[in-house]
Structures are given as structure tokens and as C-alpha cells.
Image (cartoon, rainbow, N blue to C red; front, side):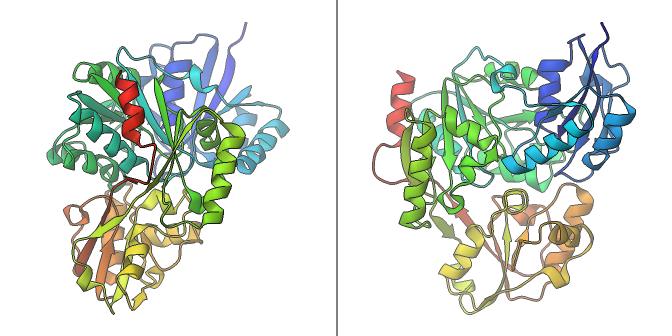
Length: 438
């Protein structure tokens, strides 16, 4: 029988994982191409032969998602496999309708079809949207487990934007490791807080190899999810973070809704920022799809290193990039800090934006009076630096999770915002984790 011809739609993460675990060594399928979106500078490259296995000695080309229709027609594609996250149900069905109109199947792989089994207990920490507060939840969980004497290693959702073959397995324990692996700002935002907390974190492309290496130095594996994706590993405890400031998204975004349905624990974060009506609606939505989950209330209170520099000043706020872009948040901790400490105004960076940063504002037109910390490569980091230094303001308020001055040279005073998870009332994560350890 002829092989089923496949295109995998992705964004340089879940797509590669789905290929690795489901298609790479499967002789019934021929993966003709990947398509890429969300992340710049991925298309036009190849998923390298070092990672594709014996069935793909030349590697697999990566096209822009805009070329999907041409690919389906010219390559006689049988099935298009959707493999990225933080996408509305409506958007996915529009893509499905388009693919079906061309005569091809449209497929979403079942989550357990792509989960790898560990020899160690696994706790996954996922979310219903980008920017809910997974990172601080992960740090809270690991802190408790380490206090109980457990060796814990975090494995982070992939962000392989450089040399994919070299990035197959990455281990981060020191700041120098970030430079060795030429990490982007987006990668640093996820890895640096772990390093600050003394946590070893793995990432890369081949998550079977990553897991087997991490198991050698851990009693418990923590899956530190990205976007609102599902876990790459079969988990013994599934913790999912929800955001009342975007209530309703937990029911209408893929695969965050899947996470909500599967959760053993749901953390309602940002309780201190949301209205009672938003929180109550979120509770009802959780209960409507998942009656077994333990629900924990929490906040992420912020701290600022030099709050006195903000009062009565014109402020450029820099927020975490993905939370604002495909996460579609209107603001983050930087805006909250600027308003809390009496900024005179939030400066609009758009008139000062250059090249790829200007393109970001054009693509994500909902972003107003703040700057996403975009840095998906050296050129974009330069564009970010130039945009910051061009902007006329008194002070920069940086709410990205990294020390931005390690990456860019800023010619202005800068205030740094930090935030950690704080549970409100009972139950607490410690109560759940105590039972898990037993």
C-alpha cells in the first residue's frame, strides 16, 4: 500500500515532538513537510537529517503556513496534522475547513498518543492560556519537593529556534549555559528563573533523549509546560493554571481546554487582580468540565527593586513577549507595577519601534502603550535594544522574567519587577504534594 502523505502544521515545538514520537519510524506514513507560524525565521529551513531518522535521510523541509494550500495540492497530501498550541477553537476549525476543502483530512493527535512514559514520577504543570502563571507555579512546586529532600529536575517545553541538531538535548544549570546554547530572550525568560532558584532544567528537541538523561539525576520529573500545550510526558499528577482575567478562554482555546478537562489540580491565579464575577464564572466553567479536580486559589504578588524611580515619571513598560503576542493579554505585571507605584504616563513605544519590533506591533495590533520583549534571534534582540534606546522616557519598567541587561545595553534607568505564586486560603499545593509523595 502507498504511504499516507502527511504535512505537520507547527511552530517549532509540538510539531517536532509529534513527528519524533509518532511518525519518525513509522513506515506507514511519509511526512512531506512541516509548516511554521507564530515564531519568525523558522520557515525556509529543514528539520535536520540528524533528527529525522533512517526514513528521512535528507531531512524534512519547513515551509511558511501561508504555503499550506499549495503544499496540499502539489504534493498530493492525504492528511494535515495540526500540532501547535494557544489557538482558538474557531481558528482551528477555519483551518480544518480550508484543508478539507482541498480534499485532505485534518487531524488532531490524541494527547496520550504522544506522551512518553518515564521511569520516575512525573508532575506536569500546564495552563489554559499563555501567561497564566505556570512558571511561578512550577517554582513553588519544586521548592516544596526539594524541602522534602527530593531531587527534582524540570523539563521545559521546547523553544528550539537555532541549530536544531545541536539543540537536541540541552541542560541548563548556570548562567553560562544560556550563552553556550545561544539562547533567545524567550528561552532565557523560561530558564533563567530556574537557574536563579538553583533548579536544573532540560529542554531541546528530542524529548525521549532529554527524559532519559534527566532521569539519571532526579527522583521526580517536573514537566514545565509552554503556551497552553499538553504534557509531552505521561504524568502522575496534572496541575493546570487558569486565568480569571481571560475567563472564557479556558473553554475556547486549544489545547488549554484539553488540559482543563484532564487536570487533577486547577490553580486559579491572579485572584487579587480579577473581579468576583470573573472568578465565579471561571469556577463554574471549571466545574462544568471537571468535577474531580482540586481547585486552589492563588495570586502572583509583585515586587519592584526600586519603586521610588517610578512615581510621577514617564515609563516604558516591557512585558514578557509571548504573553502579549499569541497569548493576547492586554497587559502584564509591568503595567500593574507602573500604575501601583504612581507612574505619570505609560509611553507608547510604537513611534520608536524599528524593523522586526515594528512588524510585531503591526501583526499584534491589540498591544498598546507597552513593549513585548521580543528576541527570537540576534537580529531581533538588536531591534529590541534599538527600540528601547530610541524611546523617549524617564525610566524602563522591565517585567520580563530575566535580567534584561544581560542581553541588551539600555541607556536608561531600569526598574525590575518580580512575582512569585502565593496561595490564598486552603487547600494549598503543599497539601496535594504531600499526598503525592506518599
